[in-house]
Image (cartoon, rainbow, N blue to C red; front, top):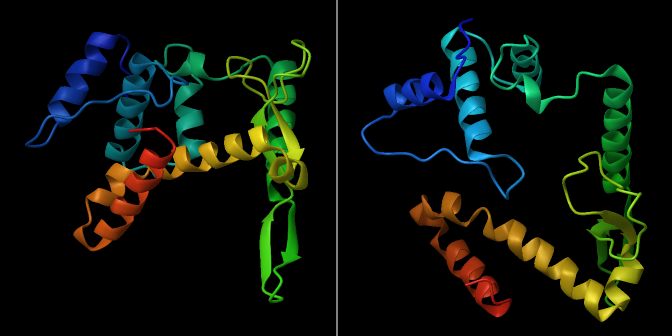
Length: 193
């Protein structure tokens, strides 16, 4: 597989793939630079063009050569990689624990047992997340989240932002127009538009 070696090559490759309309390739939420997003996009297209299946494993394999434009996006030091993987797995495990409670009418409601929220009270040395560039977060029991006004608001904002991130994708489908209206209403309610 040919790997683009410069941002100029990446840009040329993307521009040659552009269909009838212009597209913008950018990183999401400031967690991935626009240049890196472009490199990932081109690498993904190369995997597909070569007849490969695009998935996490194929992208990781494409990143292994040091000359790969996405090589720097991965941790290659074995000790650091094991720690990063372990922390990521621990977070996944915490997200998979759920509790079920019953409404007054005996209707069961199942939710995550722990919610990840900003951890302003944690020491600076503790991250709670594998990516040290992201804000510190902590997993908090859902009962505490729902009983504290500020945490409850943060929790609601987290999901309003999450749902809002799907708005443009949903808007492409006329039959889902009612969802776009509901998303916009929630965004207005929380001051996001």
